[in-house]
Length: 484
Image (cartoon, rainbow, N blue to C red; front, side):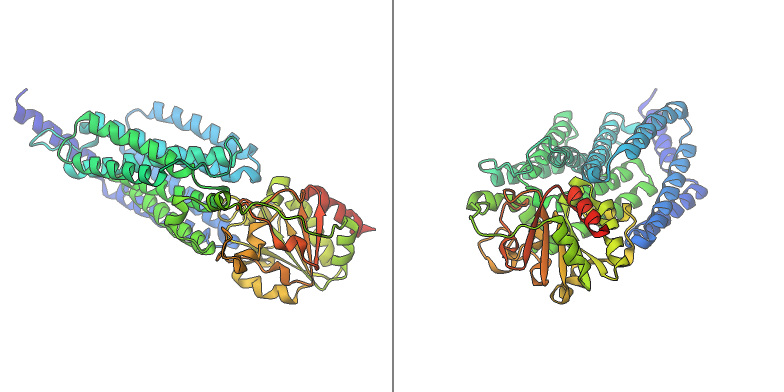
């Protein structure tokens, strides 16, 4: 076969691969619109179910369109979808809501790995993807950029998400692991990745491609291990953004409009959410990547506790105080999630409302291990949406509230964030629970501190009563005491 004939064959294959029928382009457009409507629906608890339905319908249309366009290997694809879908169904049915953060991290890792595998497949067989320059027989320069960025972002997402999963799941310490000279190592590795991606434009040698892949896996690991548990909400949303950009880059390689749109939506929404989380903690995105709350606390000794007097109360005391109140504001935190106390908490709130007490829930943006963690748990317990308020909407009400019932939240209620410039959480907006007439603080023991590693002055205030027990058991005991 002559070179001209071979080049013509490749050109035809590329044209067939890139050309999309009008009906398919319309289907991808419809799926993109549904994805946008899904994001809009997910912006509010009241419309979140509808948003999820839009997203599922949009994904069904996108997958069906892609399968019809590429009709080869449908049996193998169907088997893969059945296996993956079956695993996903079982996991989703069995996973506890308290384990949702690590599940999200695990899913992000799979998206990153998928991007790596697609980029590798495109590199090893570029003609099948229609990304060959017919004049030279090499991979198109623009495709090399897409491929290099896609595999770099995908690899970072995969290894970073694996570390986040291990930290969230308790397989690795949630405390920051500080490597000596980590900033120099990280900056050097990132510079090497960017330099090699640029060099990949002129040299598509295997060593360049695989070196970028290896370094990207390494930097994903290095970026996440120094981040402490207090910054995990930002990490989860950041990895969500990375997975979206990786998918978008691979969408360009695959010439798939739906994948580009979906990836861009996920990437941009994740980036915006990361910004919101950082703003909620009064921290810059760069400072989170560079260390995390735990880093400063560990080095400054902020976690040292001082022996100070405090008051201990019982379930009966708490039941009496709340039944006499006009308004109770409940502040849930990760301790509630671990104890799975949300259902008992809703039962307690129902009894209070039956007694004529006004009940509200105050949610800090970074309470728990992922954005919206507390909202999801309360929704699972069928807590009415109109009783749940964000920090900026309810903080001013604590001064007029009889009882602030804090269950498993520490750092997000710590007044040191407003007064102690040496504290690692200084500047972070917190819930002003100490301004309530009475603070009931549910905690396992006085020995532990929050993820930031600092003690909470609220424990020792005159208007605070500590309720030391497992959160679920304590709330159940309070419910029993209210019934008597």
